[in-house]
Structure formats: structure tokens, C-alpha cells
Image (cartoon, rainbow, N blue to C red; front, side, top):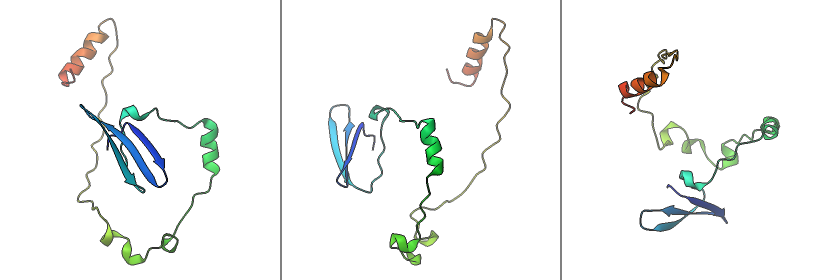
Length: 118
């Protein structure tokens, strides 16, 4: 959790977690879930060519036999999590449009203060 460096090799993921006083090296066997900080590197965004190529790639589908599972091992009865409730998100309200006639900055600052952002 909160790794600043991550490396994967030989079925093992290793990483460095920076604390206030020291750095800690951590290691886990794969598969693993890893969270990183903003210090772990820049995101790599796909190029347009890469996006177009991805559209043509086949999507692999596996059934239970391919995964070595039986029907009794999967499904709601064997889930590790459960949804206890679902709430519909409130509709967005219409925003405020400010016509800037030299006082737009003050209007924006007043709005932010009113919303307790500043």
C-alpha cells in the first residue's frame, strides 16, 4: 500500500514505501493488489494508433473449466463481499453563470467562501 516504487519479476512484486523517518521494502507473491502514490511515476496514456489497434484485438473469454473451477466455487454464495444497499445519485443542479464585467474574481471568491472551499 502506498508504494513509491514497484517492480515485478519472477512471480513476485517488490516495492518501496516511504515513511517519515525511513523507507520500507515490501514484497508479495503474485497475484497481488498494489496501491501506489503519485511519486510512482507518470501515467502512460495510449497513442491514437494504440487505441485504434486495441479496438481490433480479440477479447478472451474463459469458462469455469478453463479456470479450473466448479460451479459451487463461484457466485453470490462464495463472494467475499456483498452489496448491502444501493442509492441513486442525486441529479446535478444547474450551475451559476457569472458574466465577468470586472468583478468576476470577487464573485468567484465569494462563491468559494460561501461553499466553505476557502
